[in-house]
Image (tube, rainbow, N blue to C red; front, side, top):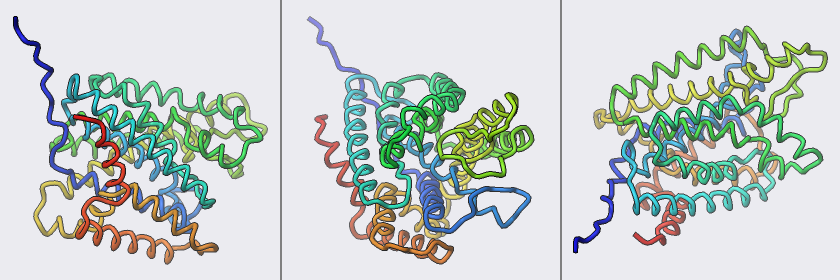
Length: 364
């Protein structure tokens, strides 16, 4: 009688991509700027004094795209494994997701004046698990469908949060699941595209610039951002007195950050792809001197969960912390020093190590 052999186990892990770590650092530093940097509320490309607002919305979306990249990297890169290995990968990612949600809720309980992305981040890890073995075209197709549905979904869930607390709104309204699932699926598709290849990195940079520029130009021309600033983050906003055409344009084509419009989602995806492509081109496979220059960013990006949580703990521990460039520099330098010293002497970040240890309880 012939024996039945298990499916071959694909190599799930490989060399760490420093460019991805640098992109994560950019996302983290951008979110810090949005939280403590005293930046302007709205971006106007013809007004240089407003350019600091570029971090609004684009930092969190880059963070979410990189979440998808991380999922893709730990689940086989270009070739996800088959059974039974893929089952173990999914189980470990599910454990990570639950722990991230728990950490996020704990950070929310600190009462910091910041919308915490981690609970949504953890839920997205769970939602993307069925897509781990999808072909790349299916992953990108699903991302496209989510982009089209992002604004209608965001509008549909608004009544569910009427009269709820800020805590509950953070859990489901500020970072709409369909909108951010788009980002994670795009990141998964990027990881499946062979991110190590120079051709892929160039394609990401070029396509990202073209996509972002096109989206924001179209949005600015068709649905300029209203002058009144009553918009709630995560959902489309239509000013009173708008015609049906103007309302439709604001819902689907507004370039406002955190509007969940098609222009917002596609534009922020373009920015994320460009940042990932540029970071990878500048760092991956480069000379030792480049690696040394990039080390502070690589260190920050190697422990994103720890750095994100730590900066919120500091904000909560120092009431009345002034917003401004000096404060942001303090957070940025502090994050770099912490990450470099921790990585140099202790290796993996504290929360990353804890989560990896718990997830490793899934038997091989």
